Image (tube, rainbow, N blue to C red; front, side):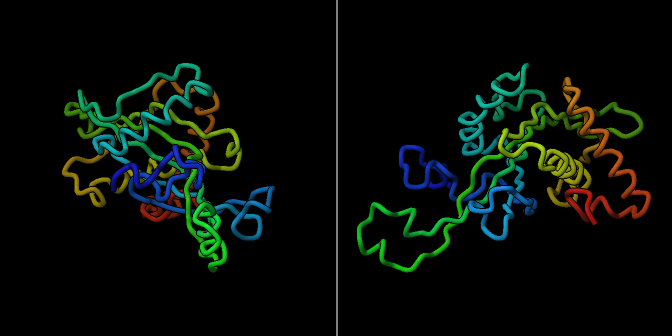
Amino acid sequence: QNMTKCIDLSNDKTNGYLTQPIGRVLHSYQVDIQDSTTAEEEGKATFVLTMAHGSDPNVAAYHYFIQPLARWFIETADDIDISDEDGGFWTVLYLFREHAMPENKSNNNLGADAASSPSVAQKYYALAGYTTLFHFHSPFRKPTPGIIVRVCQALILPPYQRAGHGSKMLHAVHRYADTYVEEYESSIPIVEINVEDPAPGFVALRDYVDYQRFVSLVSDPDEKKKNYDGSD
């Protein structure tokens, strides 16, 4: 779908929210939030994880627009061209918060007729974070050749930090790798996930997720194909 149909920052009726998530929806989940007045139901907010391919011009345009945010929170952040396939290719794991707004409220400039019509919930999506993944082939890797995925930038925006989103995103990266051949019809498997210059906080997160995966795989070898977040 054309990017202008998903986001229009020149029109303040939806405050620049997306009308649909960018990329392929992988998983949605709810978390408790403190400000229940802004939640859809009983103090819970809905979040959506998606995977987008950098070769898609709409994805590349969207990422070009939002990636300057990383400079405020990642010390070594640089802009990247996710459409560049020199030496490999890029995907981006996005995290969006889902908002529900009455349709007549979002179209309050259409006059009294629209204002008096019944409210219909319209879903909008706000960026909460993203992780950039660079894929490259390693034909001589031992014992198994294949694709190596490198986590390059991982960002959760401040309003959503310390709510468990980082671990859910990293679990989603692992599940993406585990099911890559089946779900993405690839003849070459993903054989390794590594991290580019991880900060101490990310090292702790990676160790925590690795421990969760170890416990899950010991108890159920098929667990890696079931859950995105290590939950039962």
